[in-house]
Length: 131
Image (cartoon, rainbow, N blue to C red; front, side, top):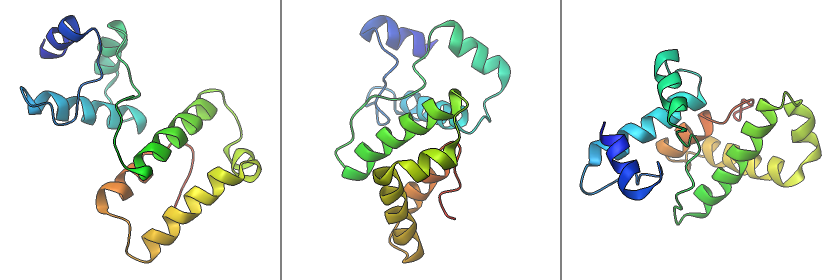
């Protein structure tokens, strides 16, 4: 209900994670997107959200370089998985993608990747970024 009220007012489901008037709404939408990406969203909830054309990929901008590149990689991998492409082939052919994931692996191994970024990386579809 709150989600639809927001959509009626702003014509979008791109709700800020820290939405001042209703922080719980922003957190809930963030959780939904995460559950969707990991295929952990119950089917009835998925059906309800699809029925209102919910925007599963957030287009909201975060200032960090990590998040900007993460969004690009997430979209690229999601599109590839949805299209049934061979992710290992994509990884071998896309040097920029390989370099970025390798940099995250290195940061993780050196204890320099925050827990929230580890969670984001875990949510990338089609890859085990730690190996």
